[in-house]
Length: 119
Image 1 (cartoon, rainbow, N blue to C red):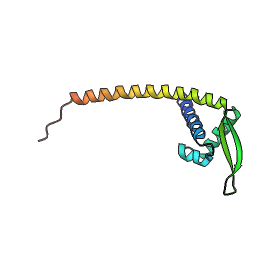
Image 2 (spheres, rainbow, N blue to C red):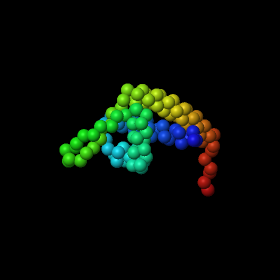
Image 3 (tube, one colour):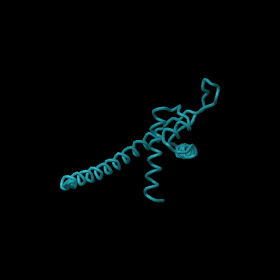
Image 4 (tube, rainbow, N blue to C red):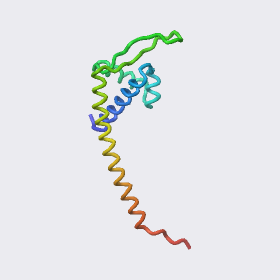
């Protein structure tokens, strides 16, 4: 599996865990909409998180009498989220450093160029 694909999956997992932690009653459709991924991808992610013991899934009845789920991070899930957060933060800092260097280079290049004279 490519490194880029693994980073994308990790990022989706990171964002799913963050959203579940902040809103345990969030629906799969809301997760998909919030993250801009398919409902199938969310279903797959939640199933994988449950199988790995990172979340617990419980049923409850909403006021509109529809059965819904509540997603809770397990202690293992909290630890995984922390590890992913640290890795995500490190990757974003590296991306920021590269972008900052590129911006500085472009600024230097524009300062050294002269505006053409218009006749």
